[in-house]
Each structure stands twice: as C-alpha cells, then as structure tokens.
Image (cartoon, rainbow, N blue to C red; front, side, top):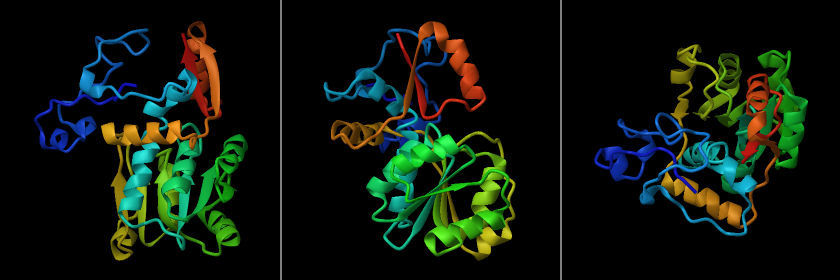
Length: 263
C-alpha cells in the first residue's frame, strides 16, 4: 500500500508526520509517474504492509475515498464534537460519504449519525453502512430539512458535520443547520469557494476544519480497521478499456459507491 503525499522531509509539517501538507509535496500518479501505470517507483518510507487476506478491490479505494473522511472524522473527534448526546451530519454519501458514515460509527463515541444526500441510492447505501437516519435534501429548503431532522433526532440542528461534497449549496445548507459551538469538517472539493454569512459563525462560536487527504498514521489505522473486517465497501469493478466510460459516469454522478479499475 502506497501513502500519497510525499514531503521534502525537512519542513515542520513533515517533522510531525503530515507529509501530505508539506509545501513541497509531490503526488504519486501526477506528473512523470503516471496514475494509470501498472508499476511505479515508490520510496520505501511511503509503503505500508497490509494484511494478505485483503483483496485488491478492497484495498484500492482506501488510499483515497477511504482515507480522506477518516482524517475528517478524527478531527471532529479530537475537537470533542462527538459523544453520545450529539448529532453528526454526513453531507454527500457517495464514494467518500459511505466510508464517513462507517468511521462516524467507529470513532463517534455513540453520536447519532444522520446522512444527507439527493440520491436515494446513495442514501440506501448509507443506511446499510450504519447511518441512524437518512434525509433526502433534493428540492428542499433548509427549513424543510431542519423539520425532517427534528422529527428524526429530536433536534433541528447538527452538533457536527462532515461534508464529503463541498458544493456551495451543500455548505450553505450545512452551516444553516450547524448548532451553537458546532464543528464543521470539510473534505469535499466540488466547489471552489465558501459563500456563507459571517456573523452567525462568530456569534455562535462555530469551528470550521479543513481536512485534506491523510497521512501515514491515518492510512495505517484505516488498514488496521480493514484487516479487522470493520470496513464495508460498495464497489463497481471495471477494466482498463472501460476507463473513459467510467470517468464520464463519475462526472455525472452515476456511480454508487466507488468505481475500481482492475488491470
């Protein structure tokens, strides 16, 4: 297993293990070392030994879709945002969000998990992955969503959010539902800017966490959970000659779960 995010090894971020946010980071799969190559050269320090019982298709999504929400949920946990009397919202339960629901169950300390999405197929998978409640947001105002949330959980706001989409309209909805002293972790990058009112963020003392990919420790922990059989996958396998077809399906949001290419 290869850890993405190769740092220079000398900056303060690398010194504490966060090579993926090194200012001089290199990404395997981009540039001279192609992402669709069958073999690539990898520095030994970025390799993780994995359990031999795990299948290729179970490992493939974990370095990206399975890693990114793990770090985001850890940030919420470490900030004290998750415990038995809290409600966590998972926004966007596609390729990343399905894993986010599972990590919320594993690391959430008993927090109630509510999954939000437009796609009924994604919501059905989120329920199978352990979400306590699923809420469709398609065509609904924030007030409508708040009412459904209140009916499901007994409260109309969210104590914490992990956003696996990052779309502008999703973030506007999320922040409108975020409670006083709530925590919002974003791992999604669909949009390119945040457009939300500032005063409620300050007056309600809310916290925004940016969370980007993951480090060696994060991936090692994900691999340990996988080896223990604690991670469920929703996968669609395809071959190399189908790659353009599946890139188009990804663009239109028609892949439920994660697509994995097998050579």
